[in-house]
Image 1 (cartoon, rainbow, N blue to C red):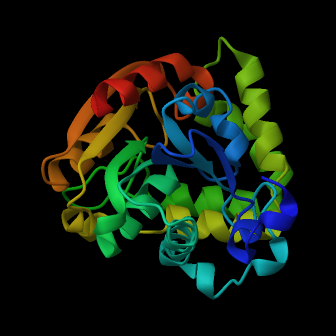
Image 2: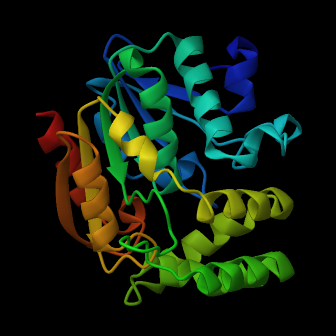
Length: 270
């Protein structure tokens, strides 16, 4: 889509539209430290049947950095508002939303707020809360998150190089960790630091029960960011949802296991 035809909202989020323009919309949203390029091995296979929409969260990828407002984006609701702006701008109805990591919760918030726009939620490695609390396993203790955020604030590039391979979780494929590191390093550090705090300190557990959209939860093995108990919790809290535990490992199956991810999405949509 030529730049001159893009609306202000599409320019803000670097929205790209491809595939079957008469098809059902399928919207792909990326996780922390990433961009829409993380879907390069997944989204093209849906273009024959679907109207494929990809975008960058403000502050990432090719988004308009001048649109970043720390007050607006001080919670995930600001990002959910952007997503609904995109839906309205493109007049998307009955859309399949595919959200990875933190964008899974952004999709949950948007779908709970405007359910008539959404036909299905595909949540890849979702987590409503990363910190363990009484009766809930999030994967991290409070001091773990505090240390992680302190390290990120002190040296974002160094943090990225150390954490990306662990998040990727495929030590036998170091090139994948390098790809994720490069993606982290292409994000504005100040914005990334703020987004990290919003992400890792968020608590969206109560929002899960507001979801009425048919939902698929895709859980990976050995995911240090969203371990299996988190996926099970999301499944139990979203009424009527489906949980699939993939054979893929780590937190980024869109990079490490795109074929399996595509197959699971297709199987669910049927």
